[in-house]
Image (cartoon, rainbow, N blue to C red):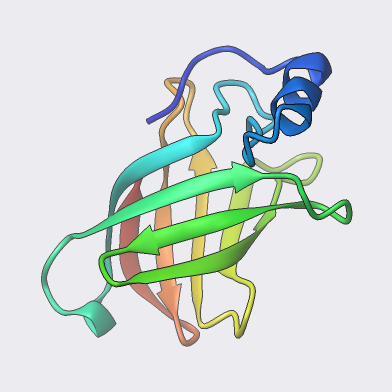
Amino acid sequence: GGSSSLPSEGEQSAAVALGLGSALLPLPGGTSLYTGTITHPAFGTMRIPLRLEVDNTDHAGWGGEWEIPGQRERVQINLPVVGSNILTVKDAQGAKTELRGELLPDGTLQGEVVQDGRGDGSFEL
């Protein structure tokens, strides 16, 4: 889950200027760190812990890193377009894993996990 206030541009700039390596997701309730679990049949039946750290070091858009036990990858974050509340997060290197979901009013990210083009998974961060 996340916090409940929209970050100001100054707060985001300060975080980057201080070299914190993270930035608040620019959505109501957005934060810089999400933790929770993901599931997908391709991963077996267990809920896998996932940590997502948001940054905006790529000036073409938002990104970050996600980490599961034994693996850390760079990700691309696509913010919702006007008229939609769907956010996507996918691995930057092959787009094999994608999270498609929404940011809830309480700051929680939740939705579907798609692995190699197949849905059937879920996540809550």
